[in-house]
Length: 97
Image (cartoon, rainbow, N blue to C red; front, side, top):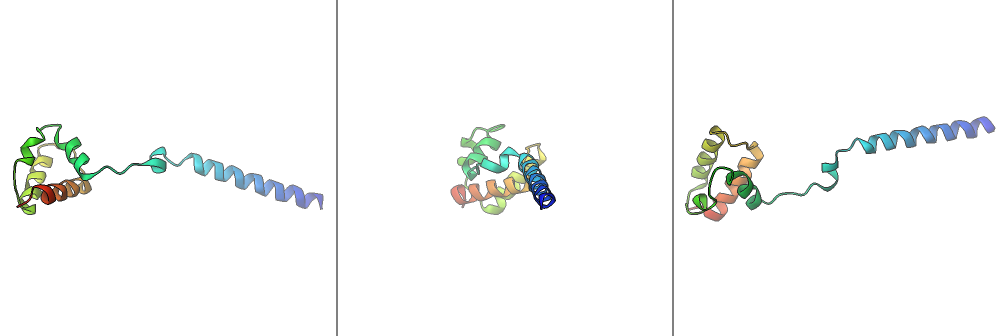
């Protein structure tokens, strides 16, 4: 009977240790990662090289905005595919023809 209690306790301690180890390796960003709005992403990325009034003063189709963003990426703008798509969507919705 005593051996069974010791074995059960050992298994429970091992499980608790594994759980604590697993939880400690979760990156902090996964816990409270805030989603950035399309407007903030546009402002953050595009203002590195441009006045924010430049794109806002234009009226382009989605295809035209796509080409402009593609050109900016070719010029060295650090955008992921998802970020580029988000910015094109924002510009098309708010400054489209």
